[in-house]
Every structure is written in C-alpha cells, then in structure tokens.
Length: 134
Image (cartoon, rainbow, N blue to C red):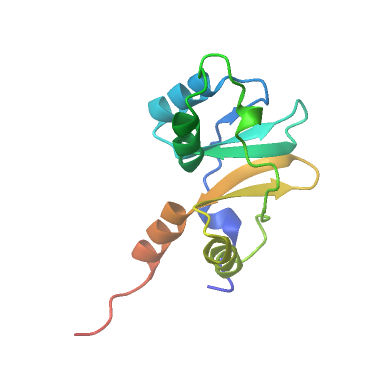
C-alpha cells in the first residue's frame, strides 16, 4: 500500500460551501448528495474548514436556529490534510490516529482537489486485495 497514492482512491467530485452558508442549507446538500462531509472554501478554493455528519449531532444538540446559523459556527478549522501524492497507508494512519472518516486532499497551487474517506479506502481494498486461502 505504500506505492498506492491518495490520488488513485480519492473522490474528486467535491461539494463545497462558504463560511456563510447556513447549516440548514448544508444539511440539505449533504442529504441530497448522500455525502458525509462538505469542505468550506474561500473564493480561491483554499480550505477554510470541514463540516461532517458528526458535527450535525452537536448542531442538533445545541438547538440553534438552523436557518440562521452559518457553518462557520460549527466547522472544524484546524484541519489535517493530505496530498494526492501521499500513500494511502499514510492517509489511513492519519485517519486512525485522529479518528477521522474524511480527509481533505489539497494541492498547494490549486487548493482543495478531493476527499479521501474510510469508504474510499475500504472500497479500494475490497477490489484490490485477494482473499486469503481457506
């Protein structure tokens, strides 16, 4: 797995929002697209945050008006990222170490280019690994 890179398994069709997007609108976007996270970007596609389904547990628990609250109130801003050239083993190690299910993939020049998820890694392994002999 050290020679398989994140760029090979990441999802490149991203759903992004801005800091000012309301959490209610973001939740609808996530439901409609059956995704577990959105990345928050600025006008230059630079990563500003991430909002995941886990964050919505806190949003519901705090009972704030969802139609008036921007994602900036709940997004994670201290974000760990990987590049497309990182190995999937390194990405998996980071995910396990931090308990992440979503890891943004960034490029220094372009900004956010993808997302690698536990589902992406599991899907890759299920296709590529041969079963153990019985």
